Amino acid sequence: MKKFLGVMAVSSMVLLSACSGGGSTSSENAAEGGGSGETVTLKVGHTLADTSHYQEGMVKFQELVTEKTGGSVEIEVFPNGSLGGERDMIEGLGVGSVDMVLTSTGPMSGFVPEVTVVDLPFLFRDEEHAHKVLDGEIGTELGKKVEDTMGVKTLAWWENGFRNVTTASTAIEKPEDLKGIKIRTMESDIHMDSFSAMGAQPTPMAFTELFTALQQGTIDAEENPVPVIMTSRFYEVQDHLTMTRHFYNPSLLLMSQSKFDALTPEQQTAIEEAAKEAGVYERQVVQDMEKQYIEELKGNGMQVIENPDLEPFKAAVQSVYEKYEPQFGKELIDEIRNTQ
Ligand code: EAX
Image (cartoon, rainbow, N blue to C red; front, side, top):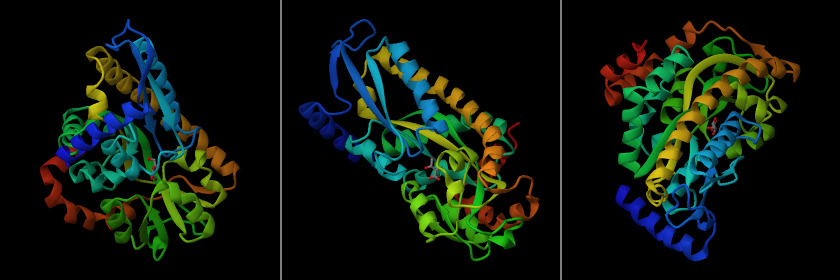
């Protein structure tokens, strides 16, 4: 995979500089690196709305990159899946069609299964617990695993948030209420196994196809963090929300290794610092939005169950731990759980 990505990236670099499209280099700014004094423009894609937490984080990232590089590097943001779904964009890192992608860990099971240990249901107590793990040794090692396996640069851990169930017409108070419900999940084996264990019928699907599928009724339900449900207007096609917080969903800001290597050392440091600082900012945006948007979703007609009894849901997914413990190792799972 690394050798393949390396080759593809080099060939795309050549292609890109030949046709001087996105990610290419053009005009003046010698002061802050940019050895050749040209401004480097880097394209970053994500799937969420231009009012989302991802976008707010990206605007902060843009500002910080411009500031820290004195304008020698510019970030161009492509929201709304305009560069494709998360899996497409991750693949695009290899072929040079995408310079950077902000992706949730869901689709990573197709690329670096080890990193999906963080997707286990009810693994994290709260955001603080998750941040402690991801900003610590475990998060660093998982980020390194992505780099070593895919030959891309892991810039930072951002946040999508705790995921909750929404449905078109069924109030979900206990796992039995999910029986036979056709629910969309991300392209994640753990997510699909968790909903099968709760009795639902999971359908993996790219985010870019989700709203239409809900609108047409080919699926009954989906699950996402509150800021996504609000900014992607799922309240228009779903009437019920239960705050199950069943998965904590981190996001990875990944960059093409060859694009990173083409920068000066000063620019590389600036990008890495900006990615981390904007990530801290973005996490706060998620929490602020969650507080604000639960009331707004009610105002938009959604029936919200804010404090369901989660014990029956946790009990229903124990089989998922039995299945994946051998893959990830009980030690790592316990280490994550016991992180204070
Ligand atoms: O990462 O696919 C999803 O449901 C995600 O929340 C979305 O792509 C953002």
